[in-house]
Image 1 (spheres, rainbow, N blue to C red):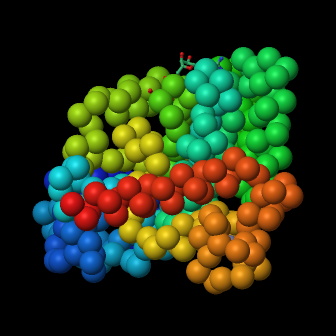
Image 2: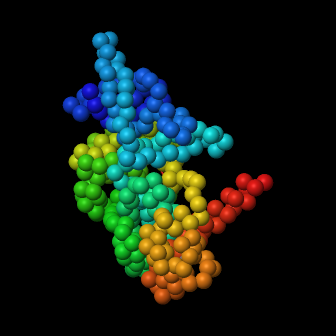
Image 3: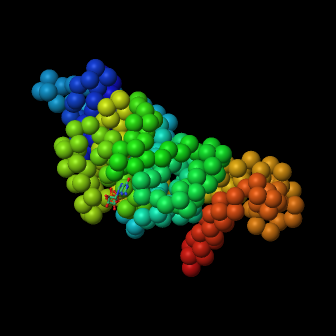
Length: 310
Ligand SMILES: Nc1nc2c(ncn2[C@@H]2O[C@H](COP(=O)(O)OP(=O)(O)OP(=O)(O)O)[C@@H](O)[C@H]2O)c(=O)[nH]1
Ligand SMILES: [Zn+2]
């Protein structure tokens, strides 16, 4: 029997089978991922094969190859990783241009790591009920920028319900990870999306327990239209990972495209001669804010090197 892992408590997994049964399962066998030491070999979002036993218990016996997964270190000092979710169809980054302001650097770093993990991302601009003219103009300019690069943008108000229906349509039949700065209204938004709000509010708020992210517990919440939401308040982005300097630009779509015309194919677009990216920034074909975010990610890499050398 096959199914989808929708909850992981650390000691057992809840699997929704393809014939719509919910079965509590334990693991049988070795599911270690190559090259990763993980605290949880199986994660929500995994497609698995299960074996039902006569006593009514069940085992997960096989796991299907993942199309993607997101991980983070189990703790700061740990070498072990924790898989937060697998087979994500998309992620929604909830942002606000005010109350609080989400910086473009934050957005761009998030988008870059989502690219690296192979997770398509959409931007959800929340709190549109609260913006004045200037803020709306600024939001519109961001929407123009990001849509042009290839990131679809939605506008919602979790408070008034505006834009919630179109957002729900985007979730239908998909596994979606929700992320965002603290205070952007992610919980309010998820409560507006999920059916049976009263029940779900309690479940979700338990996620906000600060100690939560040190445990292996995670859960996907079904949405009415047939799809799931993963809410991981502990993660602000997808985390950092090892990449070469040249690689950083691969995760900025428009910079990557333009870099084909740089003189050097390992150009980092800082001070090399005949750099097509710098030229495009000067000529406003590439946004300065995106370029600044790109440079800030390169700087992080340098700091990392400095630290590791000591
Ligand atoms: N005006 C307005 N306020 C909103 C909207 N959505 C949420 N808020 C308010 O923003 C504040 C933060 O909302 P939360 O849902 O707790 O934000 P969060 O992103 O989940 O924050 P954390 O729990 O810290 O991660 C609350 O006071 C909400 O009432 C919105 O669409 N419009
Ligand atoms: Zn260049």
